[in-house]
Structures are given as structure tokens and as C-alpha cells.
Length: 107
Image: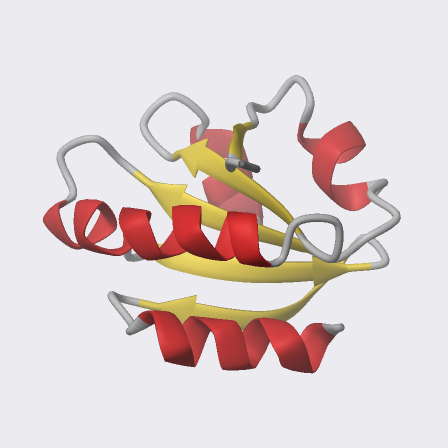
């Protein structure tokens, strides 16, 4: 089963911006209730779309530079990157079906 990988300011460029496949980046924090609500959906989608889309998680508390760079003002925020640039964004807790639909559009 594929699972989202934790990325930090040290490996964000390599894992996300230089990825050959689209990447969903989940900006979250441990204290965030809605982040915990969508985590199971993100894990399921990581398995369902394994090999098509890479899934990454960025803890905004320990990696504030990445959050600032991409203007993350509320969490959870899901950013979809393709060819090194953000192409879609979802802010707040969304149902799995809505997240999946946006991801399929990025493929």
C-alpha cells in the first residue's frame, strides 16, 4: 500500500518540484482537526492512485518556509503540483470524491 511521504524544506524541491508525476501536497498540522478528518481519504487515494500521483505531507509547524512560499493561510490545504508548479488548490476538509475528481483532472 502506497502512503503519503513526509517532506520538509530539505527535500521539498526533490520530492515535489522535480517529480516526474503530479504530486498532491497536503499542508497540515498535528493540532488541526479537519486535517485529521481528511487524512484517511488521502491515505486511500494514495493507494488507489499509486504510480499515477505522488502524495506528500508538509507539517506547517515544522516547515513554515514552504507554507509561506505557497501562501498557505489555512489548513488543511491541498496543492496539486504538475511539472514543478502548482496547478490546483483545495482549502478545507473536502470529501474523498471531490479530492479524487480534482486529482484526475491533473492527470
